[in-house]
Amino acid sequence: MTDKNMIGVFDSGLGGLTVLKEFLRVLPDYDYSYLGDNARAPYGNKSDEVIYNYTGEAVDFLFKQGCELIIIACHTASAKTLRRIQQGYLLKFYPERRVLGMIAPITEAAIELSRYHRLAVIGTKATISSGVYKKELEKLRNDLEIFQQACPLLVALVEEGWAGKPEANMILKKYLRPLKVKQVDTLILGCTHYPLMIKDIRRIMGRNVKVINPAIMAAEKLVDYLKRHQEIEKKLGKNKQLVFYTTDDANKFKALGERFLGREIKEVNRAVF
Ligand code: DGL
Image 1: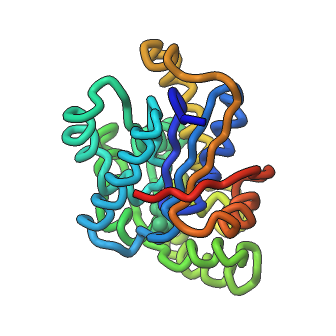
Image 2 (image 1 turned 45 degrees about the vertical axis):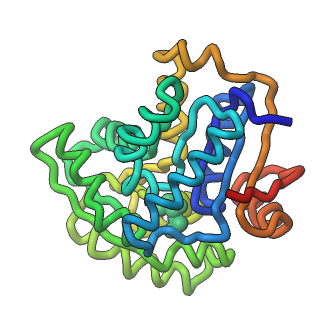
């Protein structure tokens, strides 16, 4: 089977399956090819150059499989590489195809939802240190109060299946309390893994804070994007095919991935770049 005309979804590991899950909910007829770079994850603590090189290889792999459109579901990779990939690699090698990221869809949605314009963003160290959410929000409005918090321990807790455990909630409280004290009204979950903790995050932040699930926003924006870009949409396959790749162990991906995707994963292929 080739992945011709598929929508590619890339993540450093399993977290992007939370995004694919929402794509499948709102756009179930399309063909998708998911790549998790599990062998080299997490990206969140790595340097800019390493994140760029890894993401570039992953995007190139998906295009070589024939993907027409790729969504970089990883916030860290979106924050650190999207512009560079779009303006360099893509223009040079695949000018007819598209690469989209997570940041723009989420910032637009956050501004629409925020009432008092006091927003907070949580993410990996790399995402937060890039300041990209803050910059993109400020491009949309100049009267915002924006607070940021890196939460480097959360990815490991989710991967280990500790979401919901008292120890995990204790760490969550430690990260979220400073934002709560600032009386933010909207919280952006700027990482693929955080939707798996969304219930606890909502409880800790309280009912006055809107917590934005990036996966849902990205899916809504993809629907909108495909409506506006018929030249891309009409090329996409609509046979409900799902293909999975990982750079690490396929069985491990399958077992853990089903928890993130919320459905059975039939077959996983090993990707070698
Ligand atoms: N996928 C990453 C993100 O959304 C989290 C995991 C990692 O650090 O690689 O930022």
